[in-house]
Length: 495
Image 1 (cartoon, helix red, strand yellow):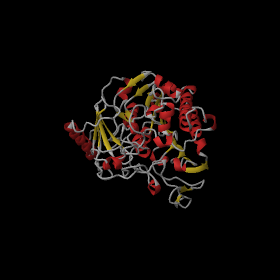
Image 2 (cartoon, one colour; image 1 turned 90 degrees about the vertical axis):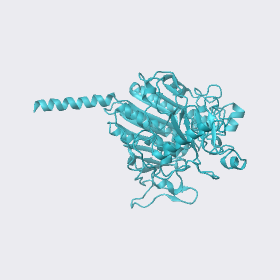
Image 3 (cartoon, one colour; image 1 turned 180 degrees about the vertical axis):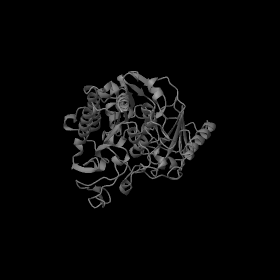
Image 4 (cartoon, helix red, strand yellow; image 1 turned 180 degrees about the horizontal axis):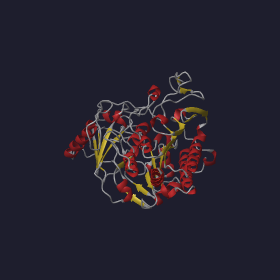
């Protein structure tokens, strides 16, 4: 009996030690922050001061060819949390809106990053924006969310969220659904407060730093999914930050976003867990030109939110989905390093799985591949060179090393020429760019390289039809997926 008890204690202590050796994982995802909004990424045309993220770049690895899985937020967030492209789900264009918001986009049987990490002994928390669908119900289980045709009215404090983040793998949650209902603050699965949007960014920063302080001495590692509301509309920098940039409210909001990121990073340091914490910093898609008033920023202040890339949020062009992506892990990732390998945010799941020793089955993270070798060695090679892009109108693009094929005549989004205008002006139905020679996507060379067009199209069809990008058995998409979407596409809505 004594021997068994000793063995039990030894195994228990061993399990604690192994859990403590696993890094805490923090994912900071900004909302509509452009690649060029970070000064370290855009030193010549970036005029907004971002000292905290610039410092992060000096302490970690900066990926210069990293992409969100979509040019708008709901689908890109789906991909981050599932390792699966959102166009495999029912959402074929745009974002969740109206009555479609009531049903979660992430199916209950899909393994999410937090679900996977919980099997490896992690505590999990989500803080901030969700926008992946849930409903509000009253005490009788009846819908508590009412629409007047244009906006949401309610729900009341005390309403319940039965199918929110807690049902998709998170132990705790505090935040809001999306920008139109930002006043509704949800804690775990209850509406607890109504709050003015101007207070939200610092509110999220408060809860992130408090969570870090609370969990710093815990035996279990934690995963924090911190989804900031900024600099997405409503553009509401708090009073202390109004006028700080001298370039308008959007630039002020970017500066305040940088400050909140710094608060989170400083909390890790102050609580003594910086060295054993892996931090991913990124954005859900590119900068919104209408919201940021990009034209004015460029002309009057010389600030280019998309840096030298073409397009903005919503577009199939680079400005829609090439995003900031900086990773810090002291002692593992070389400080101040830069990586120009092509990657996508779908990679988070497989990367975390490899780090914690979790086994992904054949139906989990089907578009996710680990970038851990790249994090450890910036010269490491990868077998995955294909990334699929998706615009707000549901238009497809595929990138393979230097080549980028776009199956649309226009931007696929809001920027000009829109698809409608491009069709009317008889633009070619497809675009092909050599991203090594023409990163600004100025010269369509589809007619010069028909074999490249054919090969890339075949690769895209294969990725769609196989139900996965990774190797494994063929799977089904949730709905039929049309990669060509012929005809005029009406402008999709977004928040």
